[in-house]
View 1 (cartoon, rainbow, N blue to C red):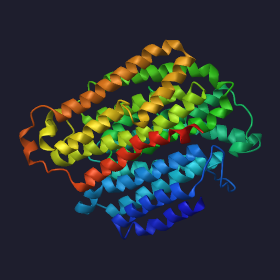
View 2: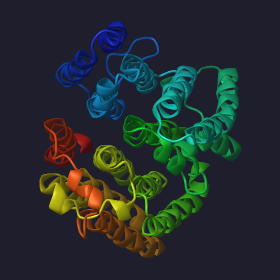
View 3: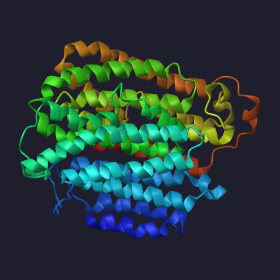
Length: 439
């Protein structure tokens, strides 16, 4: 397992010489990772404080894939000669910190690299963002995460006083107050409704690469942390879980209604991420195997789907220099082949078959309905409004009369179609290997 970390370390100097070589090597490393790593639900290839199981394995593959696609999506930096070498360096640093976070068996190592991964993300938003408000968005992201991560550090110190920070050696249960302190940073990261205000602001101000990594991997850090550490709260967390399920489902419905009022395409996709991750959190809080499996599958599906939607919004922005629905109408007349990808990803966003989102939502809906039949109303509303805002996103951007500036649009480039295909293939074909996720 260390060979992949060392491979990325040796790839960092290459980032200052060749942009495309970094992109190619990341794809090669991703395929090697799939070939050489044989995982089960149990930890394998354990060193002193690093190891890998199915959960961390899937998150690491997602990190490799999204980081490679980020470099492929940001070729405008190469054309404009806008600090593209530094950009490659920041992406590789971010990937390295994410891999060690997912590898960690030691709680302090996990916490350390969990926080380190925030720094390259902040640099992406502040350094390559579009508007001057990106500084405010970066501060929102920084202070939300840092403020709520301090209680987690206190819990880690308390666990150290009890004897160990090794994940598998810790067999004690922590009380209700520790449940709040430990998991608050993960609730911010997912994000839980009421703690989500940093996310739309960060997405809207971030460049396409920043939005891709935020939606694709950074939100999944919250879900991953909850999956890892909920075993310490099986007794005390169950008393609090009903409230969290209610907040996440109610928040998902409210955010879905907010999506229907958006005039900015990127803002709509950002708010839809909050709604989907609310569904993930409700599945996790049922403390059932169906909920855990559904949450894992939906996290993978959402990471690929929302990343693809942010790419599509960026294609419009690069041509028209605006993300407004009112100025990006009638694209089906201008770029019909790209309109097909809009339909494919909008349908995946509403959990149409055969996407991973469908499988994940079926598992989560099953687990939440068994947990509480009263949640059926919220689940119905969430599914309905999810389809509504996905249809709204597609219909308003593709139909209608194109503006006068639309006729100078360039047609789709090969790089853009390749980028969409590399998002769509794993999103829709991984369902054929769903038995791998239920072992």
